[in-house]
Image 1 (cartoon, rainbow, N blue to C red):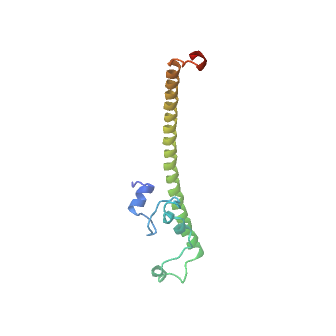
Image 2 (spheres, rainbow, N blue to C red):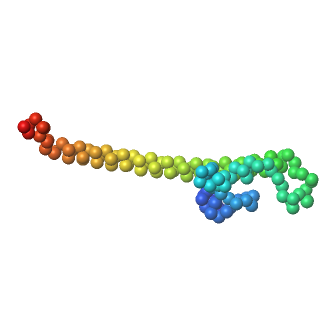
Image 3 (tube, helix red, strand yellow):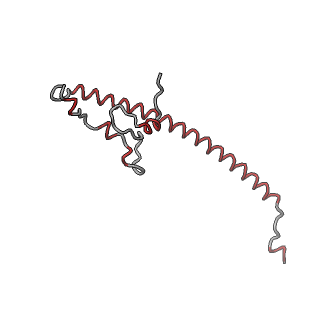
Length: 128
């Protein structure tokens, strides 16, 4: 049984079923505008001319739809894996945030306790 590649593993391996370069499945427009795989998935289907020689003049509409559905299914699976990874990151960051909030609360309580132990400064009226 082969294990499916993670999103990062697939991107590093350059693995695709369509011979295209595999990039991260998320839109990173501000980081790297070429990282989107949407263009490759949603573009109109075009069969390479080398494979058209043995076929009819043009692929049938059913074949085009089938290819598009296959690409969309792969994209859907890719997005599900990415969503799972992001959900794990959110859970880890939420736990870290809660831990930091707890530590901050404990530190505030210690500072408040120290402030209460300080002697009160004489007021200006007491000095005269």
